[in-house]
Amino acid sequence: MSLSPLRLRLLVASLLTVAFLGALDHTIVATSLATVAGELGALEHMSWVVVGYTLASTVLLPVLGKLGDLVGPRLVFLISVVVFLAASLACGFAQDMTQLVIARIAQGMSSAGIQLMSQTIIAHVTTPRQRPRYMSIIGAAFPIAILVGPVLGGLITDYLGWSWVFWINLPFGVVALALAVFAIPHVETTPRRFDLAGAIAFTLALVALVLGVTWVGDPGSALAAVVAFAFGGIALAAFFLIEVRATEPIVPLGFFANRTVAAGIALSAIIGIGLFSVTAYLPTYFQMAYRTSATVSGFVPIATVFGMLVSNLGTGWLASRTGRYRGYTIFGTSLAAAGLFVMALLPVGTPLWVPMVVMFLVGIGTGSFMSLVIAVVQGAVPRNETGTITATTNLVRQMGSTLGTAVIGGVIGAGVAARLPATLDASSLTPDAVHGAAPVIQGEVAQIYGDVFVPVFAALAITYAVGVIAAILLPPGRLSDEPVTSTTEPVTEPATA
Image 1 (cartoon, rainbow, N blue to C red):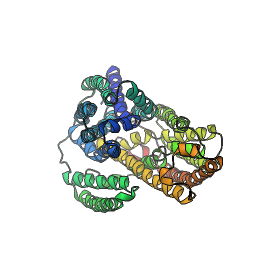
Image 2: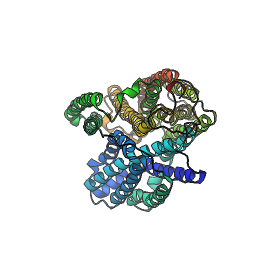
Image 3: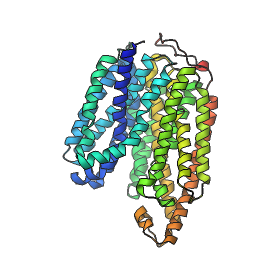
Image 4: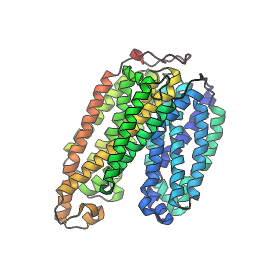
């Protein structure tokens, strides 16, 4: 499906704007969270503002992906934008934490539709050769949101009030919606049955598993976590049984027999497990091990994300120019694996610019295939399954990040608690308390954090090393520059995807 150059530019501008707003809502709320919870008088429920959003955006991915294939991505995208704007308005007017959490859940649901349908629409309006360039532009919304979100959230909260953290979406979202109504074309679809049983089983399984991961680090919620994991396991088993028998499965398991799909989804999972999961802990690591301030500790994750942004745009442009893609995945996984291995070897007290450079290179490696694998996987399935495969690829990345974050948090918490001297309490250990302690204590805590993070970085390096294998197994070839004409055949053959 070809569009005029002007209409394509307007479409990309609309998708990028709304995708950025959806991504921004993951990061902009963080700095205003304490203020919001304090004013609404529910500090103990503060985490649900984030958990509700993340949970809703995760569990709806496969459902919305399938709906996009059944009714067309245009309708799902436009409804998602309208719901997102309405939920943003409701968040700002929330009078208590319950109202805010409900509105955030609606925001998360619609954000999933926005992000997913943005990638699906790009796949429908571009050739496989053009796709990496435009996919990288849409994919840039996430790293940009990470870079500007916390600062923007703090400025808005301080000078305009926390409600405007949510209301800022409205003027930009309305303009993007108007552009989308004009620019997004109708995609031809064929009537097919929706896998309702599979959708219900999958949603129940993911909700239970995500809640279990959320609760597993809280000793008071240990029993709830066990019950959630047990229920999630049963629901997941039921889901697989349903999918094997379903005529139109919500996640077609047969896709995984395709080498391009299997390797691409494995690479997507490695991004979630190998990098997204650890970035949340990097500031704490540098505050404790390198004894930096909170502000300075943010430089390393910023360097990581900036590297990701640069290479994401660069490889998208190069892949569209040459049609080649496999080399970028091998290069990216190898560079990230080497960088994380170096992080495991760095002694505590190394000048801060050294880990900044190393993590910048890790970001370069990850960004080299972050958006590219989505474009490649989309080309390996029939066009009428584009939304489904896009959702599956994003889902494994999201789940990898969620599970990886929980595991790394548990390892760090248990490791630090086991090594701390009896005079220090792990539950009340803060960077300020350590920085105010005697130099001997500071050095001891720094070494403890350094020792605890060594196996974490080493495990993540091994994860990316597995990614090197997946990248090598990705079939070589060139992306086609021919427009897509069939809805039931893969855009490209797996051997030349």
